[in-house]
Image (cartoon, rainbow, N blue to C red; front, top):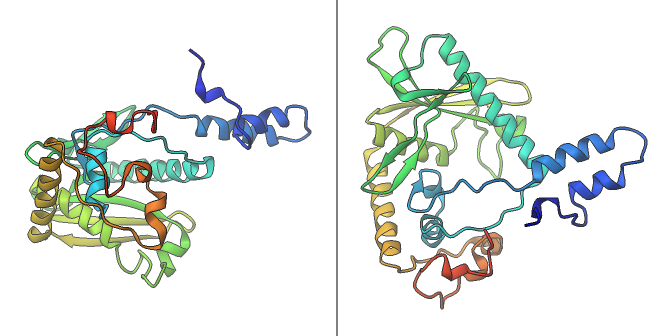
Length: 274
């Protein structure tokens, strides 16, 4: 069976490699790297679970499709992949520093290729799954635990902010606060730290958070409603996104007011090959 990842599409990284094969300079080098970054990999999303970050989405139907295991192809360019990978490496470095400072609580961590990672947690009743970046203890009071979420951002997002919102160095993102609250509620650790680092100047800001039980109860209630609908092969309600946001949704082609009962994968057979 032919490997679709090697198809030469117009403007693809592979087509740039071939076009630059005989050219002077090292443009072919970057094109080769871009091709590797843009080559589709294994889709790791698993149906039957709702990741805590999935519940950041305000459209119940979107969450329901992902929970049901409906797959979609998503094109991510090389520049975006480099940003993601840079953030991952920064996170590894910060966790290494927490370990060096003697702060990691190893009962919530495991090692992969000499790097510490948070243990994946699953809440069976609500089908919620998440992986905290780290859990640490206070340097003088080992019984005092904190969930740590590590975020990296550019200079503008750290210092200036965006769309009227202050920079993360001044105030944490509400999405990050809400998601971290899920971790606190599920783990029974009622304090957390949002750790922001600017990728440009490497300035760091930490925001301490307290547990909000009402917010956690709302997240559990919503997850349970969506789970029951999908398990009964019913389609959750959709939320119309402003500024044409629905057009960007990967499920736009199957999401209509006449959407039949949710019976993935037949629902999308021949539309989304993955």
